Amino acid sequence: MRSEVVKILKNGGVGVLPTDTIYGLVGSATSKKIVSRIYKLRKRSPQKPFIILIGSFEDLKLFGIKIDKFSRKILNKIWPNSVSVILPCPEKRFFYLHRGNKTLAFRFPRQKNLIKLLKQTGPLVAPSANPEGMTPAENIKQAKKYFGEKVDFYVDKGTIKGLASTLVEIKNKKIVVLRQGAIKIKI
Image (cartoon, rainbow, N blue to C red; front, side):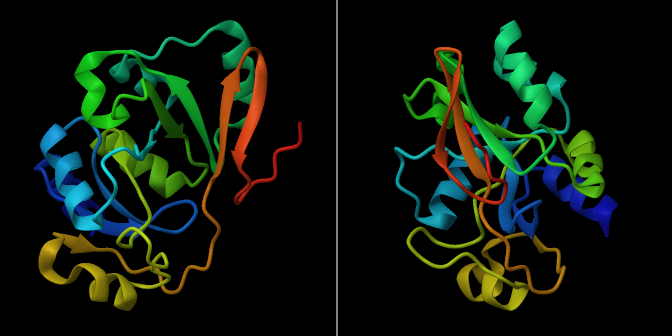
């Protein structure tokens, strides 16, 4: 199944699979067309950027992200984990991802299977598997009610009742917690 999912994602597909937190609606973060498709599927506000799952620190370079020593030290402490970190991304070519915010949120998950997948597919946008304003799907049956045949695959891992990732930003040499989630960050 994994090789089939990798092939579908590399060929422009979109699907639902378990992430390190909850089920996600995933597709390539490096494709403007795929990101646009996920916005439409989720009926998501165009001003809200997606979180991007990465398989290594090296993936940040694909988005022109430069990390200073302080930020690197912080990232080494909190990654890999269910913590999404907002980093500056002023490049215009990534407007389709940052939506004018000039920042992107990345998460380097701890799960070995997910990292292995990301190393094969490249970075994936991974919003929760639900239309905006609805409860995130806790199982594939619920995800299918939301998306039906509009997605290219589903990976069933049973019921997942996780929390969303913790969302932080590194600003002025400090960590700012924007959303407490799966991992508690103490400042």
